Length: 249
Image (tube, rainbow, N blue to C red):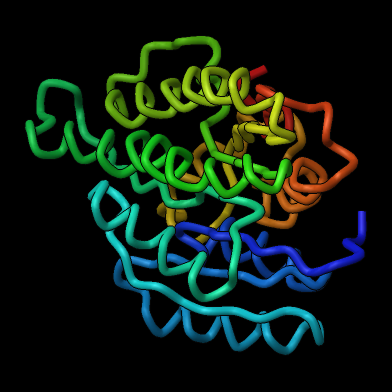
């Protein structure tokens, strides 16, 4: 799956967690990485330093942007394309959540889960698509969550869960019209992955429910992501792959 020439990936939430891990793995293959962050400036800049050190072809830049704002999201794409000349892969890695009972959820909190998880996938996919169509090649990868396809009751993370379910529907809606242009749109649905964002007590509590017997690490996601972003996955489109150690199956 090693690239024969440099490609460019735009990764939202790329300063930490899964986005960071995928960005570093792509840099090892010679990809150039554009990281979008909202507030993690120091972490984003540190990640870019690592990107540049991993491969002689790999370049990197960090961009501050609130991708829940469609105007800002469009400007981000313009800036990245101006800096690198192209965007070959969009990785929608940003996806904050909060845990609160359904009837204690605020109106602002409800809207924030859609504004920060689902809507940016639409905005950014829409803005990167023209360049990908022109080059007849592109990859769009988003993240849902394990059990989303089951449409379960999730009264403690309801808005987040619905937004992640929406990503599955949006992935399939995007995949069909973009497929004739050599663009694939896919989703990975992780289970419990230790990205330093979830409370440790929550991870410890869930451990007994994971058949594999351990909490996943970002590297457990990276291999699948690299495949979906590669030429080898050119016929995989509109797919959702659950990576959960058997949890939720």
